[in-house]
Image (cartoon, rainbow, N blue to C red; front, side, top):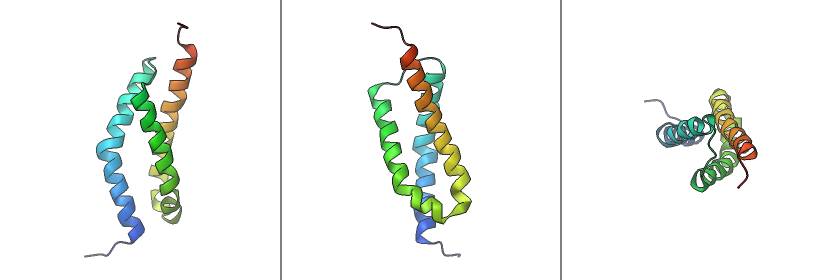
Length: 95
């Protein structure tokens, strides 16, 4: 059996977590903001946690270029959600 590096092991765990947990949540939030709704506090907190985690995993991705494209696509998804949420909040009727 081929041995994997510590970096690859960490990346594989992160990919599994992303696939099982983060991606379904991201897709639900994307659908919500695409329909014009703002995110709630819990969803905004998740976005903050994801942003913090990105800072922690960036060195792993930098050392393992074969994962850079998937990391970029994931970040583009999260950034798109954030931008659309901000747009929705800006365009929301004032109370």
